[in-house]
Length: 194
Length: 149
Picture 1: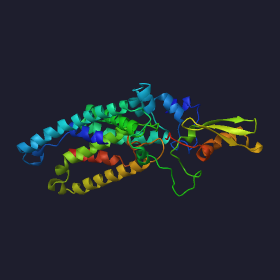
Picture 2: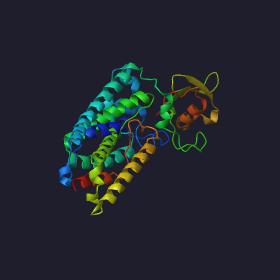
Picture 3: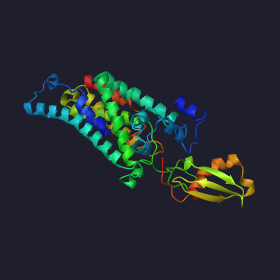
Picture 4: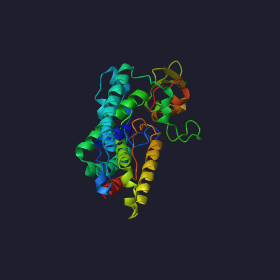
């Protein structure tokens, strides 16, 4: 983030150009943002991965850091570093590829593809352990209600992020820009441990 | 998120049924193993397929042009053009040159490679002010804005 601001001449763009408080598109492209034309025509395939470590601005960066801290930490603690890394990297690459196909005219950056991948993993965790999370066994100490609440917040969070994806620089095909209430996912992962 | 969901099916730890005093039949076990393999296999197939589709394209044309509205919408929609909080065009990146002859005008390099002339009055030819107004000029005068953020 600091390097991108430095390359931008130590200034941020106007808010109507980049509402995330960050550098210009030229700077982001220079640093490795997803640009479909450059990926296809100039064989700059590395942009598929490099775009996942760049951010559009301070707001985008802080939100993604918080999301990664809460969701990534919860999943890594429960399911291990290797599983978390596999999910993050495959989701980041897959999301950028989808974005490059469906939104070739967009210049996009951000780790949110990977972060949303981790949220997707939370969903698969819920699906796979559904009968345990919502069984009569967990009703006894009132945990089922908290599990239902977590699932509801998870769905609200996904919808909220899709709305944030409607801003420029943040694209919904890579499911960028994760948002708050991620701590609930860590609750869910802890709840799994029972 | 879809990739995460698929990978998660393969990598997420499943709680053993025995822990809850439930019996696990053979069908359930086979279903679990199949789900584990399918999650990762489908993810890899999807990545290979999307890579092929991307590389076969020209990197400029989307298979569905209207898909961009799923990812960026100028906001708020009720505000007039020129007064919105953010836009989904490429006008933030335009450049221009002040040309004094034969008459004072701004030669605007539009997104997409076209160029248009915008007439200027002498008192408005302040460089800094003009630079700030370039995106607005672009939205008003450029014919096609085909590259978007």
